[in-house]
Length: 547
Ligand code: NAP
Image (cartoon, rainbow, N blue to C red; front, side):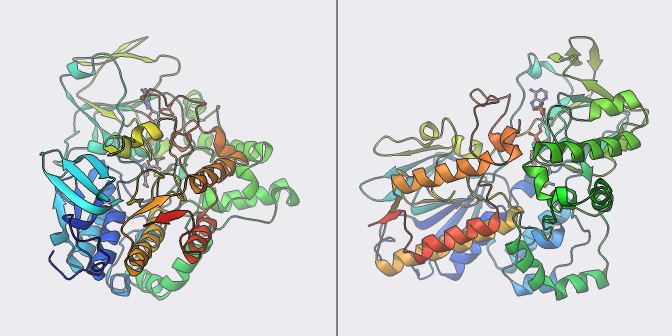
């Protein structure tokens, strides 16, 4: 870490321990580290976990896997990585994803720039020295000119607040913290609380192993088949041959996938023609059912209702018990209004004799007891309880660090009603902090957005070097305009009604009630977002103030 610094000469490397500290060694932090190492920047990565991998280090529950096509999720920046890596499945499972990230880090010798088991407790920007001081859990203090947060968007898990949770005598954990040692579920009575994307992946797997599985569902979620398959050597060779085309398409589509919306016009086609598209999409791999669909599905209540009715019928065809099927069909929102989970035999799991659904909207969980869970109706005995109860999305990972400045500003206070940012990357009043894949950046296939952010932030640091600047802050008016734009982008879309993390709803956190919308994401899509970033950079980073 004593390499000659590419930022040297600007004065920004005189005092602090580092020029840049990256918080988080997941998908985003790894790539940012690579770019800074290439520039010879004096930097370090602080990772709270015991090793790298971020979301793929933590989420070890059975069934955890990409629901992006593996080859659209991998990094695009290195031809060697693209040439060497073989994805074994269309939607790669968690152990392979973690192996991939380790392979990339080892290949570029990034591990020596990473410090593990380092949870950042607080970070304070000193207005007089233009540097941040980070305090770690172990009391260590580290100073740096810039902080790049790569803390993930769904990395602050939230537990429910049931009475008696700490009295349970069996094993219980949030799915995000699924134990690293294999959990032997054979012969066990297992409870899963929640039916979001995580639970929908893990329920069919747990059902195969456990003696009995009880799912506590408060609201059903729309879900559609993942249609995963292995990738053979010849298929992988064909994928490698078209990587340029794949990434070009991902850069062109709103979601950063190969899936492009159908723009033929919902109402220009007959009901039969629409149904033909849906029959095809239902059997195709990945998010096509959501993202190759008619654009009207996202904006027009009637179009959405017709498509939701179609998916409801598909669910009815897959669940043997018609009463149970109705319970699994959402009635309070349409398909695609919340983030769509993709599933592998999820609905069929309920046809098994060892799987039971408890409708928590009828008989809510009253308390957790030493032996299980009491609902308002009945007492259940369990050996294992899995809380698959979601995340304090986007802002949670920031709120868990005390981020403030020497002049008395606290990020937690500024964001109490939701994130306020410029371009999803910087925050007025919090100089020299860049957020990679932060709140209010484009919601896309994650690594595509992460690479975009890193590819914007890295030249910003170089620009500052070239101009001899050691501090940037955000113009308040530019920030306000961005926030207004982010809010506008919600208005035309049905997702503005989502009772989920997309709008900041989380019943386990005070202040995150439904109706108090938190504008967490930029809904304009990747290409528009990238265009705006490029314009800002081309106009000497308009909206940023340097000195
Ligand atoms: P989630 O979608 O927020 O789902 C949480 C679930 O827990 C919901 O069913 C919720 O019910 C329920 N719940 C929460 N608190 C509860 C309480 N106190 N009592 C009863 N039920 C409660 O969380 P998630 O499933 O972890 O998914 C979050 C996001 O992670 C996904 O949307 C996706 O973006 C990402 N994810 C990605 C992948 C992947 O890429 N392969 C896999 C998994 C997750 P209500 O609906 O009633 O609130």
